[in-house]
Image (tube, rainbow, N blue to C red; front, side, top):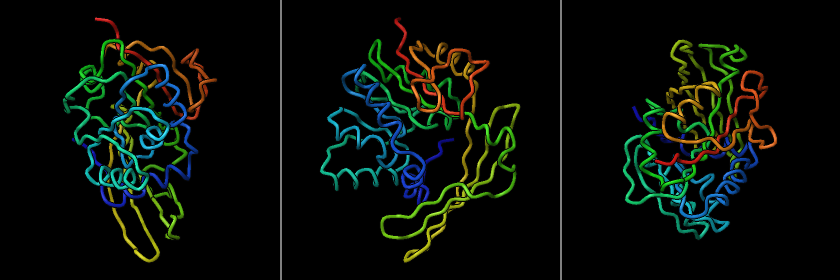
Length: 258
């Protein structure tokens, strides 16, 4: 079942990311696109956290997003910045593009929200020109798997102070399905200040080991050209069995020849 970001979950998404990260993926994606020039599509573009800065640098990137709330935020931010952005509303596992792209950008854990990630990867073959590139980032939830975060209990997840001075907070709790490698999460969003609001949501993510992801990419018709950990290309995955990382895996791939 599609899992769109709605209400406060959409509005606060970028603020929480900004508080945790200084734009690592923007730089990495821009470098990837230099190796795959032409028209790109960001899958799960959200409210524009990555796509708008990429467009500002002169790169040709369109966006695909399931959530209408996210798309409206992205359009509003693009208008504020004087940017033209081509956005598409659709489910990444079913949407059919009118044209093919030179590359796909799939940041964060977007693919892991799919009901069937392998089928979704295969579907993306329709999005790409022959030899097209795929940039893919996923994460392994080590904190949950290893018990650093208490299962079934609410814990503080993110917080941020917004530009207007309001305080935003996210609390989460989770349940693991180890056999099926599923992470079930519940979220409580809070906005306090002049406009106090709350929102609750649920989310289910798949997780995979490096070997499992590599095998899925191969089965879906993609060749891995590079893989590294924790947004750091200087940390390539050489020996998957001994890799020591915080949980972030990034793959550079291209569509295999027919």
